[in-house]
Every structure is written in C-alpha cells, then in structure tokens.
Image 1 (cartoon, rainbow, N blue to C red):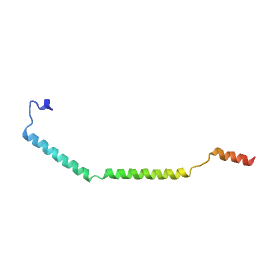
Image 2 (image 1 turned 135 degrees about the horizontal axis):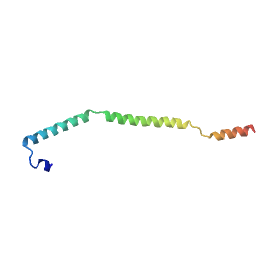
Image 3 (image 1 turned 180 degrees about the vertical axis):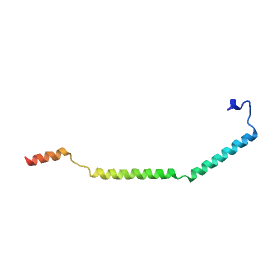
Image 4 (image 1 turned 180 degrees about the horizontal axis):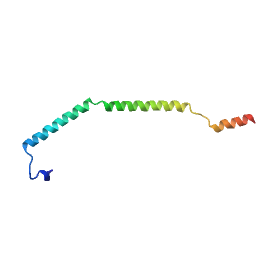
Length: 81
C-alpha cells in the first residue's frame, strides 16, 4: 500500500470515510451474527440425526443372525441322516 499511495497521501476526509465504513460494516456483521440461529439448528439436527441412526443400527444389529447359514444346513443334514 505504501507504493500505491506514496505519491498521493490519504486525506483526512478519506480517512474519516474509511473509518465510518469499517465501523458500519462491523456493526452490520455483529447484528447479523446475533440474529442467525441456522448454525444452532444444523448442529442440533445433526446430533439428533446421529443419535437416531445409532439407535436404528443398534436395533438392527441386535436382530441379526447369531449363527451362520452353514450351521443350519449342517444340522438339517445330521437330522435327516
């Protein structure tokens, strides 16, 4: 920036304008952050979704077969012999 403004220094009016702009932008950003709850909803929904999926996977995992298919075939063959 020194090279850009070396030949033409910044005036007091330009400094005041830049300061006013940055102050207004800071206030706008602070107001936007405080009114937005989308991040909180996404975080809560994500955690609830993960918990729901874990519960569903657990229920399906409990009902899985404990023995292999080959064991059932083996027992049937032994019984018929």
